[in-house]
Length: 464
Image (cartoon, rainbow, N blue to C red; front, side):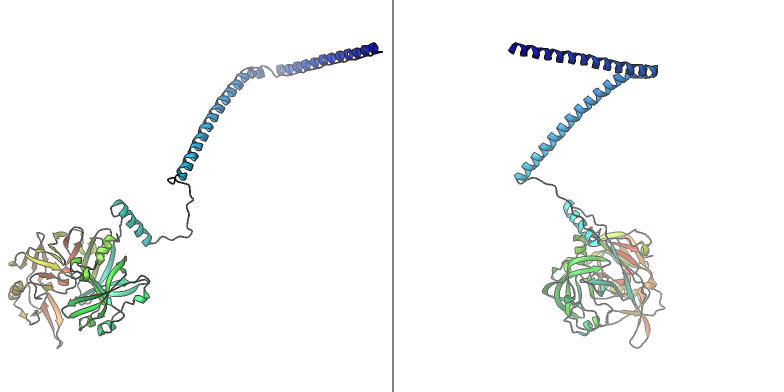
């Protein structure tokens, strides 16, 4: 039985093998037929396809090679980039871990931010301290009001919000003062007073302040606040709030207080001056200021006070100033090299100061007497020289810095009204008991003056 079973299995295996061989032959013939059909179709498409087919293979091989090389380069570049990034991350992590490194932080942007002039000035001040130089380009200008050729005043604000005052710019003193809230004198009652409680930038000082004038002493206390003049703001400026203003001088005046523009060396209590603070806070571009005054009785077109610039061309017609050095810091003092009346030399070299707070011109006693002798005027007990308004007067010549500055003789005569209602003329040159010249408003009205703090000099240019 077993031999029959084995024979049957062998027969089945033979049949399976023969069947698989026949099937492979059939599949082979079908594949060959398909290739022949494709070849015949290609041939029917003509030689153009065949011609293009031959180099196509080379192009494909070239493209394959290019792609391969490009792929290799990309893989290499990516590998290098990954290596660098990994190294940078590792370095950053190490730097942060040892406390001396860095990290990336987003920058905030404030919506609807409005830049102000204070922002700009702070930035300029910051840069100036960093690089050791000034980047400020700011200047300021304020008009002067002329009252009867006797007072030239301007506006000044103190505090936040502004408290406005009319002040007298005075190159013959160095302090700022205005009436305070506790002043009950008549002069204070008729003028504006500063109220520290109304200012958010007020800083209490409390130190006693006393300054003496010919008419009496002004007394008060020091304070600090923001002071604004000519469109310029100085922070933490020390000034005085008066408690006492005796006499009638300040009662009858058109100004509320004084804006001192002299040197710090004559400043009461050694207070830093407004111009000094303008320079140190980089409020002005150049550490200079200029004054031009105009005549014309009660004319409101009184002139100009400029901070940070010598541009007074509107008053001089040019920028050609003659400069002379300051001989002594305190007042704006210099050497007046000579003085003439007509062709007569009245004096040689003498000291002189420019004082915008004095209405007239004061001469030393000996020179004053010589001038009056030439004029033929009548000297009063108060140091004035009266004359007829019809009197002809020779021109006056001041020699400064080697240049002659001529003041027309008729400008020496000033009309005044007596207590009895009569109109007479007095000489603009008076005697104030000094041994030096004081060139006040009667001189500055005709010669614009530059006060140069940086170069320690004074400049003059004839007004047009």
